[in-house]
Image (cartoon, rainbow, N blue to C red):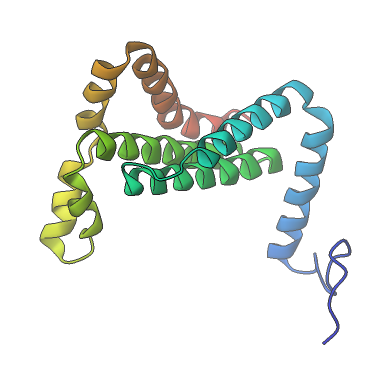
Length: 173
């Protein structure tokens, strides 16, 4: 089998529902890149922040919290891809995952004992219940508030938006 040209789509691309959707999403991303100057620049700034953060995670005190930073960045990248492709309601779900990974990392860094609960979450039903009880946003947010009032306000606002805007965006068009 000959390697495909990375710029040209493979044979039969766009001939079925799924690859046609993916093709349209790709074109939407190109259009967004060209037309959304200032919003795209904000996304670049957020991505640059993640890269600086990750580059400075040499020998972190809490390795598992650092792992969650990688997961948060991955959610951000997926959200960016989704948003630029035109899947706005779905973007809010991904951004919520981004914030939750950051909050879980913060929680573990502040209270390292929960790491064991998180890592054993798939052991059995009791372990899954334990992680659900331990890692609640309502448990974590007071710790954020105590650490930094401004960060708390921003996190609360953004987290609430990921919940309330996702369904409304589906009906806005």
